[in-house]
Length: 261
Image 1 (tube, one colour):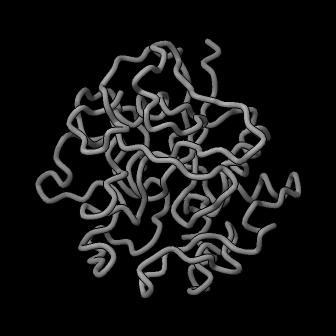
Image 2: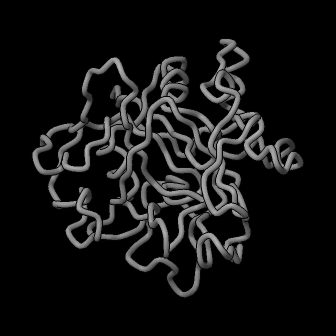
Image 3: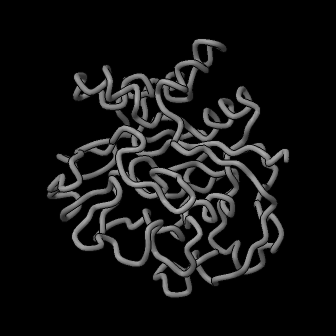
């Protein structure tokens, strides 16, 4: 895990980790899947309770609290995007860590630990920046949904998408997993600590600290808003933290299960 060459100290040092076998979703959880959960349980998300969620406003060049933004309506300022075939296949976003964890409980699964997520994202490659290798755009190929151009002034949409892409729109990695870079960033189990790698355990590391207050939780993988000049979160070692009760237009999740064999 980690990257000694990264400019971000929270990615250092590189270190070896040993994990028990596990299963992980091939795709990010979609709106269609999340809708089944809501219909079965009547669950109401953090954004729906609050009445708003965070949206990136390109005109204001910053994050805004957007009234009416939630998993059902990811882009309320452009209502035409919030239904139809594309919406059903999009990764669910505007879900907090708490929402993702509730979905996991319903399915009998859990969010991946940060270590599980990075192992899966690497796809069997060693010392590589991305799920497909060390070159961001090998031979000019764009292999994930991220921001092309100078963020936030220009998005060339060279990957074919302005916003989210249906899951599985880009090539899978060596483990057969899609969108481990870009599209929607993904919640992990762990509480975020930028210095965790300095003393993290080798066997099945996962940082959890009991608290009555909302914790910062690890987010991995980058999103359609990740750009070379601003946020290279689509690198396999990149890590950040967000409050577990907050929701954003660019964060979703996938789930893991134990290997019962």
